[in-house]
Image 1 (cartoon, rainbow, N blue to C red):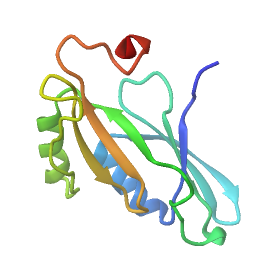
Image 2: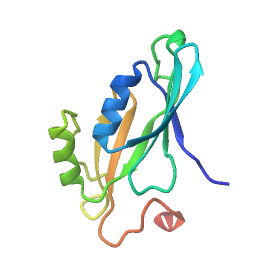
Image 3: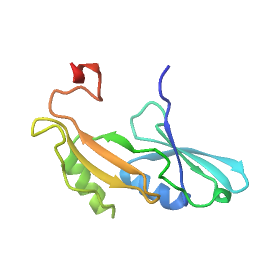
Length: 137
C-alpha cells in the first residue's frame, strides 16, 4: 500500500488554486461532481502522480479546519530561494526555523486561504528525501 494524495475541502476553489499554483503545484485535471461541486487534482512538476486534491462543495458552506488535521509538509530544495519566490508571488511565509538544531532541517510555515497549515522543509546536505526509520535510530 502507499498514500496516493492528501485531499482538502476548500471554500473558494479559484482562490485556493491561485494559492497552490503560486506555491508551485500545477493543476493536472478537474472533475465536475455535480451541484456546482468540483475536484481539482494537483501535483508538483516532475512528480509521477497527483499529490493534492482540492474538494470544492459550495453547498456544504465554509470550511472548518479545526477538525484534527494539523499540517501538510512539503520538501523544498532550497528554503531561502523558495521563500523569496513565494513572497514575490504575494504569499506570506513565516521565518526560517531550525526545529532539530543548527545541523537539522530548516523549516518555514505558511497558511492557505482556508487556514490549512503548510510546513516547508529543507533537509540538511546528505539527508535522504523524507523521514524514514533511520531518523529515529
